[in-house]
Image (tube, rainbow, N blue to C red; front, side, top):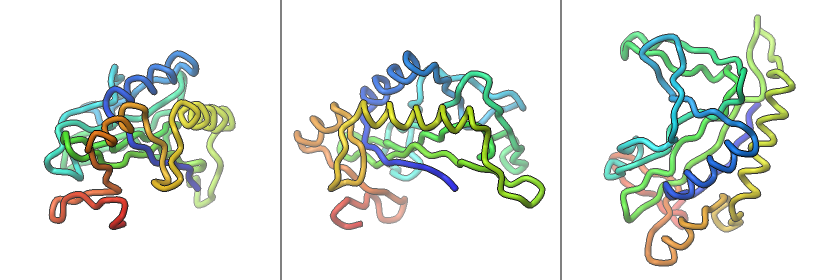
Length: 182
């Protein structure tokens, strides 16, 4: 099983939210890939470019982790790099791609269990409690939009009122898919 929620955050909202999570819950930010078997710690979740929206200049792409978490890496041969395995004790934070006119929805996501010897086993209780605390605090720090089925940052909402557009998703062929079209 897994848990997730969607969000619309501008880079300032991302920074504010992550600072709150760092201060109150001691989260670490981990890069989604590494050139070695050692995970790379980050200062910021934001990176350049987009993966869904080809015109995006920035996006969120990292994992949130508690100190002392079990992090598993797997090697991707054709890319010659290591990536964080989803069996790790992490929360994935991706999306929020922005090109100045469009903001693509992002998400917080984690798996609650792992496959071990053919059996589905819950992740460690300490991690699950921590991840639920992260979700609660993140949601409490943002505004829930029932219409969007997502949580929205303060800056993102102001930006939207001034003409910015929220997109449910995007792809390289079609471009942004707006909420009303989803």
